[in-house]
Image 1 (tube, rainbow, N blue to C red):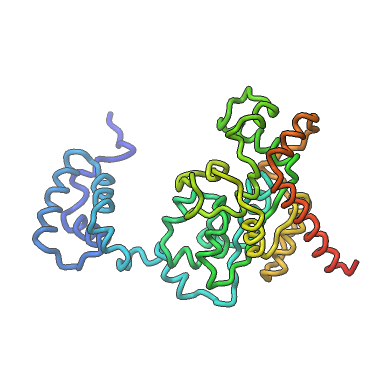
Image 2: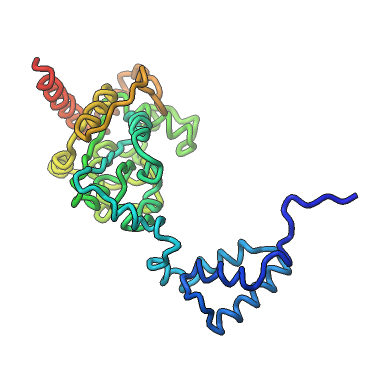
Length: 326
């Protein structure tokens, strides 16, 4: 007794005309094939007949110079390029850009904001290389961008007046949280104590200031394939450079008021706040008391971040007081 295989061999199930149409569609060729295309299809059919590797043939088309040259004008990829989104763009709708400082509650904020948009309208927390690979028309049509790559999205979308925002955290909570995260994901030895980690010269000073004032085209040590803390290397940004970065952000809140920042974003962007009860706390840990030695090392690692956090707490309190009339 024989049974049908789960994945039948395509040998004999794909005709020359069908493969030719598929090839023409993906490569953006004219309907009438040229002799070189007929020869290539014959070779490919023979290969598929031997190997059942239709996927490999299609991948070879996509990897070709012809595909790279033709795809920007190929109607089959119109939606991928973002042509329709760009054509339908409302010039009065401001995109949202979250300059995400790691370990500040940004994941919780992103989760809430995602509920307002379709998946095709957002880029959330992907590597920088993926962000830079998005076709330009689609990238410029996005409604929400979040990531660990500084003000780059603000620069790219400046003609659309993006609403740019961020969160910062008390350095006494930030560094222990970053240490716990890096141990969890294997960036550092899980047995390394907080005190010993803070003593390491590789532990980046003023990490949050780096995240806000980071400039991929200027900072030494930038890695296009990096993510999170691996992006930020070299000397800490000056107060002047950090202040300039802050001026380009519309809203910056302390991490103790993620829900308040969400409400402000919704009010400014004309979004209806989602009613979810208690605001979610994702990818976070509870703060722990620091020893005197640990606090001293955090102070040494974060003079600019200390100024940053105090400044944001002050300005955020002023904003909230002005709204309540207190």
